[in-house]
Amino acid sequence: MRSRQRGLTLVELIVAFTIMSLLAAMAVPLARAKVRREKERELRWALREIRAAIDKYKDYCDQQLLGPVKLGTECYPEKLEVLVEGVRLAGTVDKKIRFLRRIPKDPMTNSYDWGLRSVQDDPDSTSWGGQNVFDVYTKSTERAADGTPYSEW
Image (cartoon, rainbow, N blue to C red):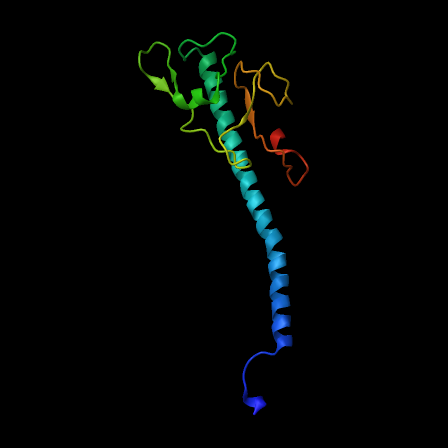
C-alpha cells in the first residue's frame, strides 16, 4: 500500500531546499554587482551632465554673452541652481538661457545634494568656499571596485 502513495520524502525535501539555497546564494552577489554598476553608470552620467553645463556657462560668460556677472566668481556660476533658473543674456531685457533642466539626483547618496568646489578651493577639498561652482562630486564615502572613492570621479 505504501508504494502507491505519492510525495517526497524528508531527505528529498532537504536536498531540494539545499540546492535552492545554494542557487539563491550565488544569485545575490550578482544582483548586487549589477545594481552597483548601474549606480556607477548613473553617477558618471550625472557628473558629465553637470560639468558640461558648468563649462557651457563658463564659455558663455567668457564670450560676454551673459548679463552682469558677480565679481569674484571668475565666470563660473555662483551655485548649481543658477544653471537651472537661467541667466539673462547680455543686451536683452527678458531673455534667459538655462543650462540644465534640473539638477540630476546623486545615485550614490540618493539626494540632490552634491559636493561643490570653487576655483579657489584645493582640488581635493571637501568643503566649499562659496565663491563659485567650479566642480561637483558625490558626497558618498563608498569606493568603486578599483578602490578609488566615488568622490574623486
